[in-house]
Image (tube, rainbow, N blue to C red; front, side):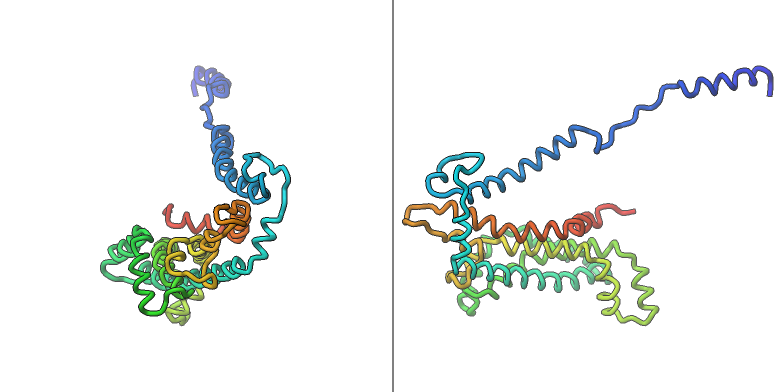
Length: 299
């Protein structure tokens, strides 16, 4: 090394730390605008539900006043709703229909999605596209024909008559979600199970299904929410209070007089039927997020 290099090297080392550093970008967690956007979304989502609770605690003339807090909060609306035998029966009907629809959708969707994700067949993409296109049909398009068919074959005003059309709308999205999730499971795990002597069915329910729990939880929540909240088909295919589901029962609430709208009771009933959905989403929120994001990123 020459003398010039010996002299300039320490200088270069001393100058290097003083060189301008690259400006680091703020991460999403440090950006105040991100937090402002999140706060705005939270407020936008929770204010209607808070207003629903606020209205459910009002009675009499307080219902006509738009106040941020109820002047005379009361639980009488909740007591009246829970004391209504028709509403409790409708709550049981919604539980039965939503649970049956969810379980059947999981069973059929799991087998169909596994076949589309793993088996070698022609036209898998076209078949999946046809299945998914069913979700584009509005419920009103099949309500009138289904009413006529159900009335002729004896399924009108029955709980089974609601489960079948609910499957029509829950199965396509369930199959599509599980297909994306099954594709992310390494095929080597199935090959290892076959080497150990497992049958295809044993491999499916002992290896694949346990790994697909996040996707199954996502499908179960989505199917249950649809069946729980569905109104059009339930109102079209039932007429008796013994078979009505909760959304239809709330629509038939009546006040003390013919022209009175029982807004307080409707709000209280809406809060009550929202609680099971909120609890389910809070319990399975991590699995729902991981199931919805499955297949979106490929490594």
